[in-house]
Length: 571
Image (cartoon, rainbow, N blue to C red; front, side, top):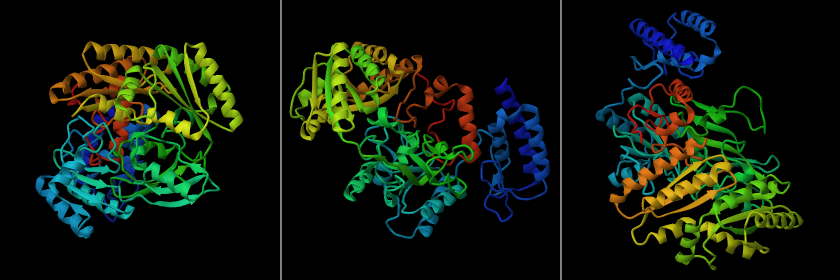
């Protein structure tokens, strides 16, 4: 019923937009402006405002507040840029600038940002910034790379991009695995945020700091340690990840079982350059607020498709002493059942990390020779336990007792920092050991899915069985406390790429069938968007699109990412 009503609204929107485009010209950025519903877009004041509002009131009365997103799309559907009427709630009629427009944009960027090292068109750089050696999804080089150092620089880039209708793609840490920063075939401007890496303010008493979005999470924690501040930022995705990328993908890491993900309360606010060139700050610095809906979370997981995040306020956590323990099991099912019981005891809150390395991964680690000690080739759990010395000792005792109950015959507890570092290095070298196991020239397709924790043993079992049946070498590492795991599938030539890709698709469908998700922490990008309708449903995806085109009616912000389209190949 709702979708039928939404379709009716879109039809009415298109007719209304066509009528208005015949009688008026609306100029984004003109002098005579007013604030549009949610979109911050500007329209000309030509007497149609009252009739538009009357129509909106009638629509609200007729179809109810549940169609707010459709009405947002209606209001932005009548906007035109440079005198041209634009699309309504979809991007099917969006037209990007020509090759000549792209060249004009580049020339204007050089004038707006005159430093000779800021605007780059070297072909090798354009290719490097438009693709990743760790991603196997379609990619194109950008038309230009712009190195920015301030929010004002980003505003200049976005305004020029909008003027010439050239897509804008943000880039920072380059650790994405799903094609998030790939270039666009029709031409695109890559905004390199890596130079915006400053910590701007530290509020130790409030337990937060303000930084630019190009700052790396590891550098932030190092800076806090060097200043003697006993706080840290607990989200820990892959090495090199930046705050902007972490926000864009809704990341997490090994600490998620204790501290949660990017979609928790770790980002108190963000500063964003919107597609219309306006700069917003989503909220103040207070730890909590019930003032309106949470616009900060609108940008977490949006993958740069709604705007470019330039600054963020991060919530910090106190540093708590940690120690490491390890337990080995006859199979994944016994390991997961032990974790479930541990986390549901009073000792659960003292488990900072619990990582699963399957038997193939343990074999790869042993054979790679990168660690100081070899361990039996069995499905293995690595724990980080936190608290006071007494709390850690009691937690370790409880973990040992529970793991033994669930079939573990080998348990080690690292009582010193040196022993803990040596034990945890098995987890640290997982990816490198996997690549070594593949031999010279080996490549790794790394993917992640997440399911309810109780479903993880079934998913791992079926996945390992499937990979073995198809003759594919792989290892598995999982954030088992969250039901999230990564499959690292080895191959050596392009001829093997399709079987690997097919295995990844089967894995994703398997996870969704178990009431899981196509990605626990890597994000959607290009590689996972074809699964969104299966996972979320057509209505939810339509709502996401409506929000997208309300904020970005020209679809210049990282297009072809996140939102599925009819052209996406289904497996």
